[in-house]
Length: 343
Length: 253
Image (tube, rainbow over all chains, first blue to last red; front, side):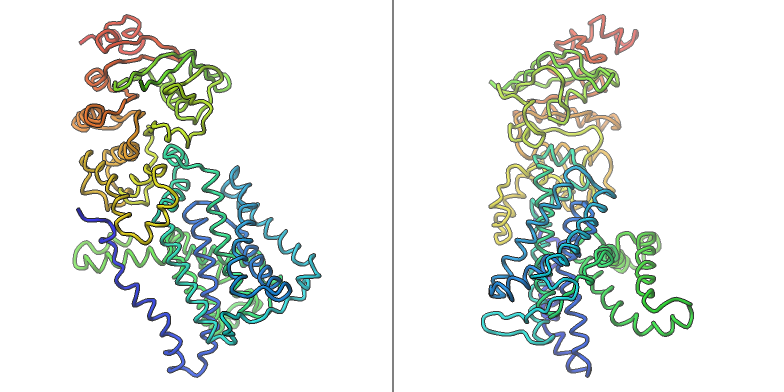
């Protein structure tokens, strides 16, 4: 009998991984300002690690979170303090910090055992505010609102000094996290998450303890976010509390929604798309838009993001990934039954 | 001797009395049917056995294990699995994954990690699910996503999910609801096979009287939370209270 793993088309995955590592060389070859593109890709990479974790929580377990910027902040500040003030090596901090963030995830997971939907969104949002205030209050370690300078990452005696180095560090872990998340989704754990999302009764009847697996989901999600935080702190050199605001948490949800919440490849695609849009295309269109609309320059980003989220939820709830799947079917069946597939 | 004992079960939701002192016992290896009009407490009884509802009074024992002190997710470890009246499937998983979900309690945490590296382990995990799908005649559906499958298939997937853990007792809630005659006959055959071939005790809630009468060893009739009659199908069918309350006056034929 045919096993199900033969059905999945995974042949292109090694080529994709190869492309990820060749890309910087291509960019260096074709453009003079490749460092800027790498800088953008690095940001996207860090956010991919986080949104993949967010997808496990919100997309697969169905527990919405507006507090993921706070997990990123906890990861970033914990690692900065551990490495620069406590003298822990970067490699060790990379292991400890996600676990510490995971513990915070469990703490914020407890209310989720009782509430869901909008109330959970508000609770996690409140958590985000608390964390920000706490970081400012713990001035002696975090330098308060003025921002904390962080050392560059060092692994096995090698210092990652610029975006070129950081790219390889970040994307190595992007691939690790995506593969890990895919494995989680395809295992008993992923099935339990989806069962909790779609039918709590069926989950319980199958022997899944709701409270345990909801906490596990929060833990895993926070671990991914904490890991992203470590990379964020050490590659951006300066972290400030302003960066980890509510808009960032909302942005993470937009990444997931645009890509296709509930699919790992989808959120990767969504994060890349939106980050590239934010850093490459919005600056290009900014001046043109400003002549058309009487708004302030700072509002343009929020306006465009809001519009994208709005349009995607209404017209393409399965996101870019769903669009891609439909397109693939369309071309497979091409001359036959073309129109109905797009609805 | 595996036996399910329900003793003097009382359950009320605010003012509504759902179960009013129900007692019966299901013997090992029998097909036991619960029938009764809507609102007579059949599904509430299932929910009590399964731990979703907590009765105010009474006892439920399975092999002398107290079921009422256990959380719903612990019930399956005792060898009791169930299906639902309203489909409780996971639409965006494949049929095979839906069935594997039922195997959750049998897969250890260590296996969750080792299967990442071992193809053989994955195949072993899937083999039992594929066996069950074969048993139910769903062998060609394993790769399909559940959303969009016909109702009859989804109903069978639900049964498959309950069977894959190799339970000792299976609770089936209205297997023939919404099925046509042919599908009902298939369900009847499957239920008999679950008992005969797999040796699983079956407790079934059903409205379709011809199905109930043809497959059951014993039938229990409930009406507004009370046991109206209990016995072999022929006895129950002739019982005057049953005819009056449930089957109607001309249901003799």
